[in-house]
Image (cartoon, rainbow, N blue to C red; front, side, top):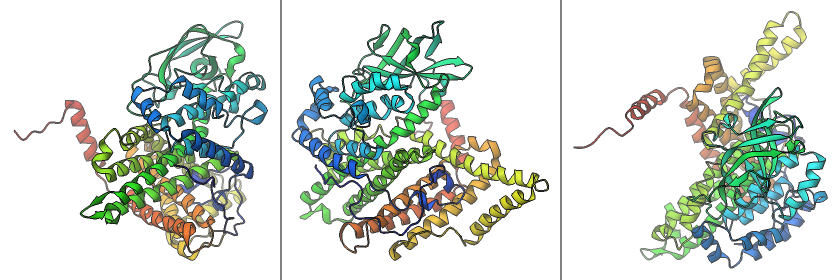
Length: 596
């Protein structure tokens, strides 16, 4: 299972880009206006030398620790729990202090380094990654982002050692993706403390956590939701039974109930009333962990599928010689390279302290989560009957992967978020143009400047003559791929403008169209990350670099077909027919036809 400790690229970037990362602009949102912010994606980022040195040791330690544990990990899946001694071993490996700064006794990895660790643990067991990830990605991430110095000093050293394990308490019955509708309440007392009441469901690490980041309705003048640091040992805190899940069964998932829990004033996390914003920031920042885990899972699935295809014979030949099997393995590889390229680009944005990477994080979550699900099913299919049997790893991989499109933001909600956020960004430019027209006589210099810039972009989109040339030497074999992304960025901008002009505020209800523009943006962002990484591999015509460029070309061609279809279906589709059909079935509550 082990792989070299090389993280991103050993070769220096093979570009002469003069671009610089603009931390104030969102690369993904800008695609909705037809702009490709080359400085935000080229050259492909390199992991810091410190992280590379640390990770070389950590990867080896994880491989050594996991070696020979296949049977034990299967038992954890069957039993639906991780033994206490196993969690203790994770503590001793230092896996609960990955992102906590050294000043608080942690390892202090960057987000890129952290995602790489979860990629390695996920090569062996998804539940292990989830136990680590729920602690680091979301459970105590609020302390890192919003905690006071006193709160950090009090809790982070114990969280780093694993003396305390953290969990994130947001989801409630009836308030899954709709986090704003939570009912757990916190009433402020005269002495500044709070009385917390409510129940949270599906809490990862719920049964083993010592510290919870809890979100509750406070209804104060500053906002309706606040965040709190709550210790599991406090009176009134209780845990429900261990949930019997389809996959990731080894990880702890329970309800957590708060009955008249007194929370000290000093355990308010961040500003009163700003809890919803804090929750979204925590989830956005933590999604690289999910992506890293998906990448690690795909690498193991590719290795399993390759071994199976090489060893299994049908009709007197290894099935690896059959075209349809080879196509599956190749597509799994394309998806894995693209997902890996995207996840570490997003980690770079987080580590660079970009102002807004919310859409990029959502794209990474959607693409990587769906890619590992495809890989799990294809590996199972290559294994044939063996893939369906519990004694082999394929069926568990398929069960474990299925959670990724569901938790930390269902992929349907993520797509709506991507589409609406991009359209809002595009709409802000249209509003700017309208303001310039209204203000043209009182402020002609500014007004004509805005209108002139807008007109140039419209002409460029209409004629295909773009002025935003890439500020680097694109290898000849990748120029067509780059041109595809430039063309479809323009097409996305045109489609976004048309949707906004046609539907205005009602566009929020056109979910099928929002999904289409979101999928175009996903292909554009993932494709450009993949292209950037392929270029960074160097000019070698053999080996990994050449294969990386081949992957980038394949992804670009596949993306072109998907983007063309999605944009075409904005104008011609079956949306109304499907909606009517859904209405009829929902009214009847059943499928209405029979051959009798």
